[in-house]
Length: 268
Image (cartoon, rainbow, N blue to C red; front, top):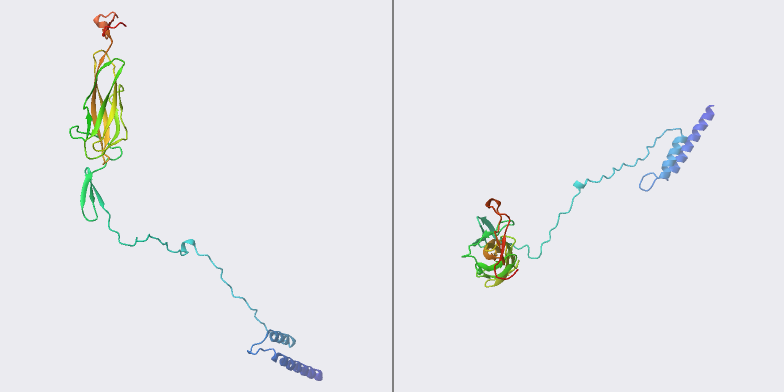
């Protein structure tokens, strides 16, 4: 038994020396063990009955990339392109100051001028003074003479711009439906220029009635202020046949009898 044990020890030592010799060629020139040497050492340890644990290589954990919120994503600053010459210093423009009924305009040099305030939308037109207003009607009163009942007479009035500024004819309105005016709406009268307006009056009412009507013209000056100018129109109504009485009144004892008389001695 002792001889067998001695022989076994000799074999183990010889095997270990042989294994060590073979492992000496498994190191690299840099002094580190090659993969083959590591495997051989592991096998020797197993054969010799020794225990050697080799820790497995663990790859380092890589943190996942997290997208930054949109609010934190840097943005490029906006670039504003100005036309050539815009970088030069700009002089301040004129300033407007509104006062009662006028606008004060102050230029960059400090000069101040005033002019009438333009009319706003919906502002009512002002009545013009016929004595000083730039537009003069000719004639100043239109008399259409005698007008037969149910008939009409027509006349013409000339509107003359006697001022120094252009005046625009906006519209015209009449006092009743029996009067009409053919006004040139939208026409601008330059200084010294005139326009003809035809006016028609229809005779209504009883014989001998005097009709007093009006035509009101509306003008606009360069400051957009509107002005009204009123022209009187008159006519006398007559009837070819006279009716008497014109109105029947039961309280006066009228019995419903009327008399028709020719006013021009012509039969009817």
